[in-house]
Image (cartoon, rainbow, N blue to C red; front, side, top):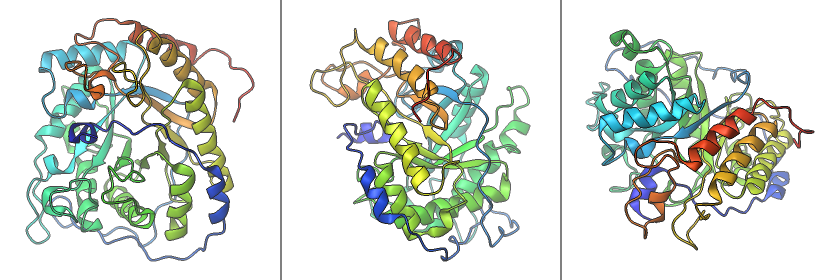
Length: 395
């Protein structure tokens, strides 16, 4: 798997869901150590967070739809004018959300000096401004370890050496782009669409993204530290578990390692790659797992699902002629499944489509110009079908 794919958040599909693993870890203890202490995310002295983590936010009303847009901003993306056209076309489908990376290394390229952090927001400002202009709300993924913060030198997907440093970055990001974010007061010319949901890392249960191997307890501590820090500057924010590929195994292990998570999860991301039927089954299994864990009210966020059209035999491959059907059916089924989904976002809206030998470049459904394609029309059709009456819900 190439580094470009890892940085672009393309997911390893073909997952084996093992729901039975949940039953092995259902009895959880009730005590644990408090989350890691917070460092100031702005270089100024801020009041310390409450010793007790804040209760989970109520599930949002209804379900939102959107797309991943990371390949327009990460690395060598298209010109700003093309990005604007692409995002406008996405909004025209009825989508309201756009998911993209908020790279820690871009936001804080140098280590703090003492307790003072120095942030550079140009990368994030570009994303926030482009999305707001198009009428799309940003669902950011706060990832990965900045070079100076890596626990394994040279591995940005290694966990941070300090949960407190990551939490400081999360706090600063929320203070800039959240409900009371300084970005919005500095840019009154933009539609005000503050970030409401913050995703902590991407696929922490996948060794590609949590190197060298997943650690449920370590990720649980990181999540709680980040959530507590974000709470201090945006108490209305929802902070969700980064999209999981093996939720029935990983989430119970998180709870076993840190029982205080119970009652303090605002949502859980899941990546249900596969055919429409497989995607729905994975969502159903995720919901069943939450019920077994006594967390039936915790919302799910399907933050990635999608297919590449190059080449036969590639991971998540589907012929181009079949993909529109997959898109329309999956969007409709994820909505009508009524499994407590708060959001569903296709992977991905745009990809460069340059090398037929690189399957990662062919997940994009919008084409290179943003003009209507069979895929984008299918996506829009699926969103229209969301409001239609559903059969008996399978969840």
